[in-house]
Image 1: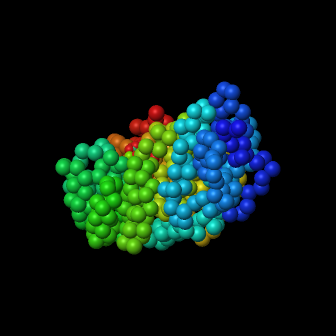
Image 2 (image 1 turned 135 degrees about the vertical axis):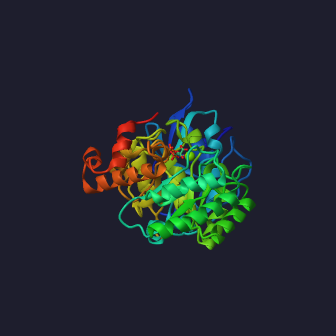
Image 3 (image 1 turned 90 degrees about the vertical axis):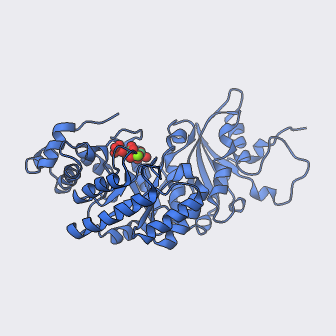
Length: 430
Ligand code: CAP
Ligand code: MG
């Protein structure tokens, strides 16, 4: 009598229907396990199966089983019937396609690369409240990247000191002041104090410059505290809230998406901790999968890397991430990406950050173009003449790129850029 039934989850002649969810995985089977058996185990454990055959099965079982239908070397595509999934519950989806399977003894490695979400599944999600167009209208910025900086050191300023650095950042021509991921509310810099101090100086900077200024204040905490902080932000005239979406968790992002949307707040998503599961190319979950789930839930923007800055991430990866967030449709690319039609779901901005300075701005813009939130932090506050000059130098680097001029050429008439290049040149930090 058969002990297991993994092969029931493999059908290499199967063609997915338009309402199936399809996942692309990279897998490495353990010694002694065939590729077909390995993918059958993945399909089984991520849908309806258990490790052994069962005495009784309800009649609907056949219709709910996932099917591994295409094996190409170490890559497999698995189709999941729509009926497996609760409407509008992203957390439940992760418990299936990104759950137990990563710990199976029969696999040496397993990586979830992408999921193709059918219209029938997406219809239960709202996606981003604003979209890139909505944010551009809200900020009145139409022909350049959105620009922000995190006061550095990451944590240590009082609320007043933090707001002063923020003011200098705005006065240098930047649009946003961003909290760092590990700054929430500390005894020396309470969230409420920071929000109030920044709001006062935001008004001053707006009056002086005639430009719209804003901030990404980090509300990350338990959900009830996040709600209170979001209300406070809306009450003091802010239009964004920031959440560390990985550490806060998918469920809380779902709750806060609606809460922030009702308050008219966009969501800046920081991805701290993502590299714990996306850095190993053979195991874990890809960043593009995280980005896709976050767009589906409805963050306004999420960090996607720089390719040239201090943190890992290749140019290819960054380009795919930008497409996943910005495009209405993405076309499959072998072993990298699946087809996706976002339908009525709005776009989200990629955010490029980490180890940037004016000398690297053209490289980042070559990759992303202007539909981008560009964060330059150490590379602004470390400018020899201070924050305001550092922000100016960054704006000048963007202008140079837009004018098709080299930075060295531009620097002849842009002293702040000249000083930045003297300090950092085209250095790529590690
Ligand atoms: C950038 C940053 C961001 C990283 C996160 C930092 O500062 O604020 O947290 O960009 O990485 O603390 O490092 P610098 P990613 O510009 O001073 O490096 O955007 O890749 O998620
Ligand atoms: Mg940071």
